[in-house]
Image 1: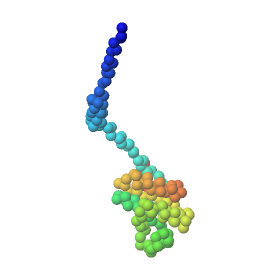
Image 2: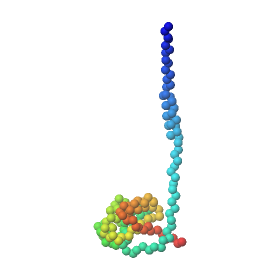
Image 3: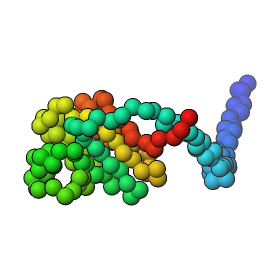
Image 4: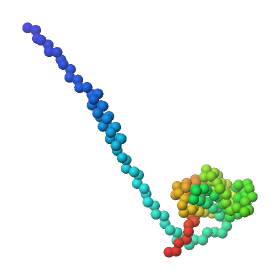
Length: 154
């Protein structure tokens, strides 16, 4: 007697609706999620109580005003004339771009290796500008500089 073969019935689950629901849920959660805002780091800058006097000669001063404009000045007029090629008898500083500052610093140090560097920043200037200038000073091998602040009594 011949056996009767049972027809195999393939059970197939259609995955399309499952994938649709999964992507719908993923999209929903991505659209409704609110990311945590970055925490702001509070920096309280120290008040200056230093009584160290600045030297009277061989000074190179970098000024930064409220508008983040950078000015470079020297105590000796011949330095201004050497670097900028103009007669600066009446001016004590001239505006420079941040990109050009490194070149001027290198030229100034080649002209007078005994120059002392001073940074004078406005109270309202952004900290990032000061940090950029300090990076430029370090790249030009000027590792000793003074930051001038207002003197506060103890």
